[in-house]
Amino acid sequence: MQPKPGSADLTFTEAARRKQIVAAAIETIAELGYAKASFAQIARRAGLSSPGLISYHFANKDDLIGQVVAEVYRVGGEVVRPNSAAATSAWSALRGYLEGSLAFYDTHRGHLLALVRILQGHPEALSRWAGPRNAAELAGLAEVLVRGQRAGEFREFDPGTVAVIIRQLLSGALQHLLTQPAADLTGYTRELVTLCEHAVAAPRRRIKEQR
Image (cartoon, rainbow, N blue to C red):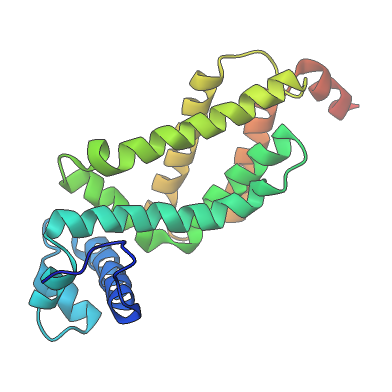
């Protein structure tokens, strides 16, 4: 009999074991890729005596992969959110989002590599798990941009379009960090933040800062 994922019926031990399996799955997928991340490989990394123990906690591989994707986004939120939660302006919120995202990419490269490999290897990963979360993130980013426009901080532009462009810049940053482990993250972050600031700032704000 399987425990009910995410329900109050999970014991402390069951919840801890599920967390252990998800962590091992992230490590396995990051190292071997989605296709080769079998229950046997995951069980070995989790220190389980049998792959069957994974089936006790997860209905099938899709169930486990869905939890892996959820965990990556959950951890990302924990890293990024504090950077912008206490922001006193739209620009400080946007800057916190940019800096927090790059910090997350740097400190959790295995998580992001696993997510990339899932999206590359699972034909429905984007539509089932990542897509809705990405849409929510874009909507939140667009809201920050609208707030900045209303406050006179940002110039006039289509918030939805610019939100997509900013996300694409961050996706490019992630790809760069994953393929260039020794990249200068501090310099990259500084230039990306400056680039975005000049791209969205209202003209009078830029002129004032140049004086």
